[in-house]
Length: 141
Image (cartoon, rainbow, N blue to C red; front, side):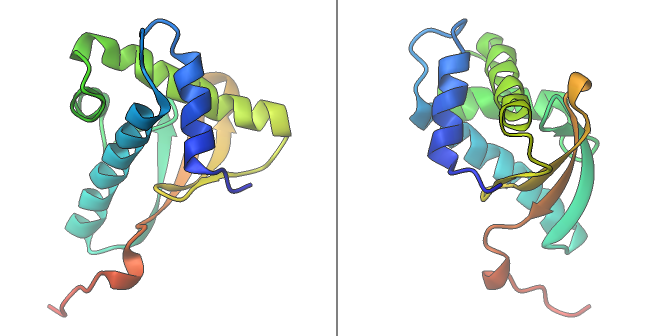
């Protein structure tokens, strides 16, 4: 199931009741930041697609929790102390798509597709696909 990014972000903004005055556009910026972190990992590995196991929806061995929390703060313009709450809202929103729709995969164009490993623990396998892959060139070694 391909999910429109703005719809996903509106739901996440509604989930983040502990962060006053957060709007969907700030969450869109956060998701763009997440995408950039994964793109950087792909570039370092000279790959435009890869699979990675995640927890809390978006945290992985390639992009650790601390990096995501800083990215959330930078992209949302909010103090870093709110970053964990925003990440939790994103985590719950992703899990809700699986529980509400009974789908086997949720696709977000900016990141790729998520396949559940353990929904109760918010663990997924992310098939990351660089959104600009067709424009990226890796020169031969």
